[in-house]
Length: 266
Image 1 (cartoon, rainbow, N blue to C red):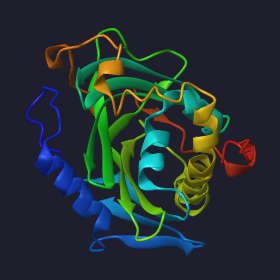
Image 2 (cartoon, helix red, strand yellow):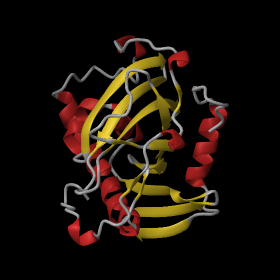
Image 3 (tube, helix red, strand yellow):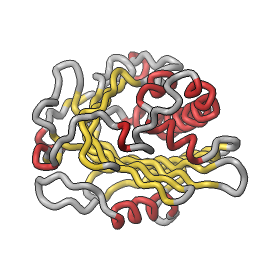
Image 4 (tube, rainbow, N blue to C red):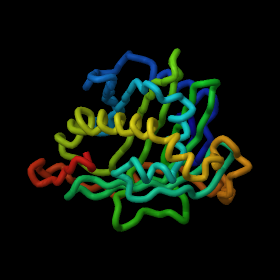
């Protein structure tokens, strides 16, 4: 992303175009999984051997792109399908298509749980949609003792309409977990956790219309900004979250046998 210095910034068209190109490009990506309509690729970064990019794609038949877009925005519904989530809430809005939020997720024991504070921006393009985020610092949300503050260097979704009543979802993420994770955790992430996560989002898309009919069906502030009651915040309150300013823990010695990886957590 094209931010300068320490200042936070709202992604512009070039940032969204670059993100879309990364999702659709095959160059420089290594295939890790391709089965049942789900594909996973990784891309090692030359400047860092730990912070790799992971890209996923799933074909979502019978889920219109606008439905999946709603699923990814609707924090109330996320609690129904994201079993790894501990807590999520919106902190404030920057513009009609940008906000700041908090998210914490459950890591398999005995790994420490992780959390993020991110600036998120979204862009509808006809029947295609993009949502992207990166980590920022907010003075009222410093790192917590019960979580390791991780850093999203770049994370996002691209939803592309298909000819029929379905869509293709891309998810691309480059996250610094702030810690030397065991190699088996990284491998399991691309081989097992990532495909399962994509299938979970697909299932959530299939079930969303029925759920939404019973839960404030007209309330979609990501589509109707006048419904947004979040407090306005200024970019000046935010700064970029750099990895090197955060605690770095070494969990690389934890063996797979000691880790409780339940089906819900995987």
